[in-house]
Image 1 (spheres, helix red, strand yellow):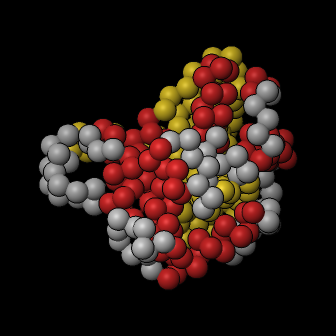
Image 2 (image 1 turned 135 degrees about the horizontal axis):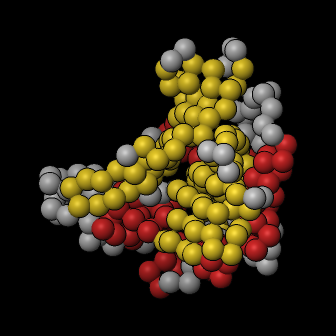
Image 3 (image 1 turned 30 degrees about the horizontal axis):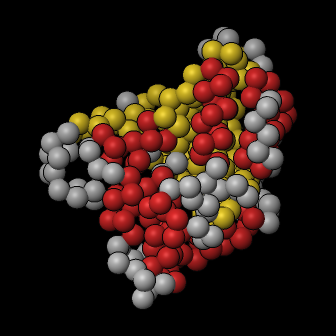
Length: 268
């Protein structure tokens, strides 16, 4: 089910950038990447950010809410992460991830840059949203960014409504990475009907994992990395709806895999 496309013209020689948000409904009738068939039906949100040139996708960042999917399949998030951590990663991925972690921690911009302009009002709003909540950990101004009855959807099936709920979602998630830094890697802006504006933000976060859960304590001190995408609907200058997508299963699987590689004698 296609829910929205937020796009940007990159220029005549570069094509265009599109951020697609889709919801998929599927029934797990056979063995899958998550294990044996469960027979259960799940709903999952995906955001695919794509560079399109000459009517073809030439580069893509794909983010899916796998933690909500496994939850609906009756699989524990950490069990799913352990399962994926058992598969080796290829060198290209490991090199890319290492470079991205270093880039984000240093606050450096992504190498994917274009000269076409984004409306300055909304570009500033998006950058301030990243800076305020992810980098400064300043959760007081939530009411300056969000309407009182705003709704936010986050990974794992988290649905927050209102200022207190949205503030709580930020605080709870960022508690596991107190020194997190995030970069605003891409912004696209399109009108929403006659009453507002939709903004797509692709962002990357890196920091030091700090666990408050017994099952994750051994991974404290390791690099935590997330590739995320957020769609914001702006009405009268504030967010009325938010959809944020990243893969929690992959984030935890990377932690577990890194730990096993660094501590082979302790790995199960």
